[in-house]
Image 1 (cartoon, rainbow, N blue to C red):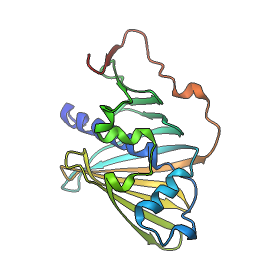
Image 2 (tube, helix red, strand yellow):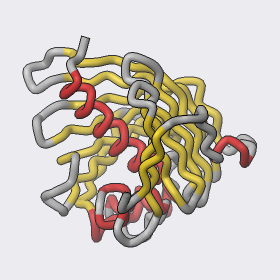
Image 3 (cartoon, rainbow, N blue to C red):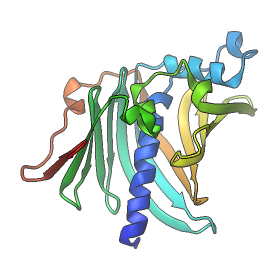
Length: 224
């Protein structure tokens, strides 16, 4: 069982991954028209193509010595522009909801909700990706790409900001569907998200993106 410090790191990783997922849920394969362009342009073309993305996931965190630190399961839903729902189950239970204006992070074990406004202050952190904007990827990341066989396309993003929570993120698409994400942090830990039961461009009710937490939880807002 992970200790409190490890759990805190894992939740930081989940939050950073959530920020990335919001702009990486994509539906269409890279068209032939974009193959001659740079990797950031190709990735942006993919990211702009999705409207909604739903999936179950398995998240595995591996330490720098190759040991498995934690495994968790959950589900996520994303919808443009800026709408997101993430739920991971115990032992790393966490709920993250973005309604386009605010991001609420609920930790059931702490009975606490942290609310962040989607403003310039948040955009100074990796959470800037919550905006869903992808036109300026090259300004924030060094992006490279490669094909693995006929159907798999991988993109690797390296943040240009040395203070980022992660040092690299690899996204793998199979026939245009986001299937896996691998993020390495500054401690050389790797968080792997594998997606299953993917639904692309399906209908998602607006109510999904409205935070709904038990009465009595502590709510902490930016600046509180």
